[in-house]
Image (tube, rainbow, N blue to C red; front, side):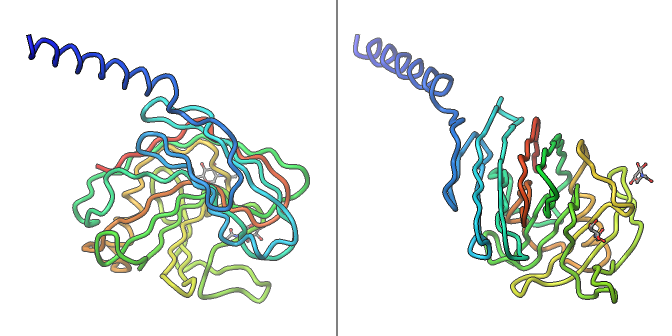
Length: 255
Ligand SMILES: *[C@@H]1O[C@H](CO)[C@@H](O)[C@H](O)[C@H]1NC(C)=O
Ligand SMILES: *[C@@H]1O[C@H](CO)[C@@H](O)[C@H](O)[C@H]1NC(C)=O
């Protein structure tokens, strides 16, 4: 009798919790706070308006538009005026499978389909942003950026041409079906390795293995393969202008 009641109670609780997950859990409302974040399964939508004080005016808001357990979609209308620095990096962060040594990662398959509508010209990029550290969850040591679009912006680099353009550290590297130039520099806190499409093409549908970029850097001795992957994000760094950035499908997993 007692055990029957307990079983009935657990079945009831299970029903309640699964109903809760389906009915109320996904927050699709718009968030505009500097560091607002919204969790959906293994992903977190983060506003990250770290450079906002450089703007004379503006705002950035974001909302999750769909999530099915592996694939997430979001939108990010933003508007920034003034200053030359990045104002916000609205991104989706993966919170599963992190803090493994790079040498134990076998693949990081990802797909990302996005679009951007603008009013006038914008300065922005669309990029994956990964960080590695000497210890699990430790401070940032190396940053790996994979840019899918450069809208009148540019990567951090140690060397610049007379006209002020960043000079690549290595050119025409074939990875994940595209050809990339690699820029190397520092942001004052960590090394920054940025891969940009060599011919300036904008990749609005990316499908590939992010681990090939990590392997390129560990294979060339730039980053130690015993470092830990601590952060994996995808989003848009907005500097100035008015745009609505939309992702219709994004998924990533660390194997
Ligand atoms: C990024 O775009 C700007 C404007 O089109 C261009 O001047 C610059 O050279 C580009 N940077 C890279 C590294 O491709
Ligand atoms: C730019 O390079 C990509 C491969 O990285 C290629 O698919 C594309 O056709 C190239 N575009 C132009 C205009 O050369």
